[in-house]
Length: 271
Image 1 (spheres, one colour):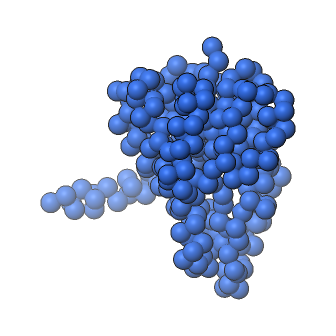
Image 2: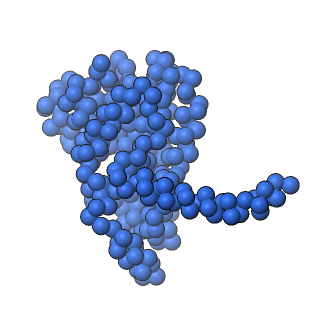
Image 3: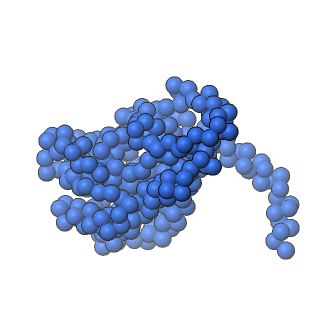
């Protein structure tokens, strides 16, 4: 049965790949982008099955208007994919106040506004699926991406809580956690801080750890996302790529070992 998908950040990368995958199999898609000209090729090919919507997700009122527009056009919204966002690359000390605020506005508040706008629609329907694009960096971190990491950790906490609040309404929540992929995420889509030479060594070490095998092929994610959307019992979290899960598994093993080492101290602190 065809579904109606509302997806943000559909101009390129994951957003456009997934929007096209949905359209190709017969779903209907409300696709948002800051510049809807980037969606003209899909509009030409899929006609009324796609509704391009100009949207800056940091504008809360615009998010509510966009969701309502999609609801009125298609009659329902089965799935919301909060994909819009970008990366701020640089050491934490290097980030300016405005760079930090802009990162949180886009990656956290933008996702929150769209989620809040979609919930009344899904509650009225008695069903829905909200998919939040986080990152493997939302559960484990890398240097030189501290503010981005923080934004994704916020997405994780918000979305895990949301899942417990809306389950009784028939609404599922999934947090998608990709490892690195060969999208434009680190290119023109990214913002780079003004470098401090004191962090040159940290950055060099970070770059040295990156190999060709670190990045997956974005197009390969479409099948996983289609399966996720079709699942009657979707998981709370889904990793994308072959790097993320083994890495996070190792990180958590190290965390558990440390927590166990300090367990007695922790217990005594209870009083």
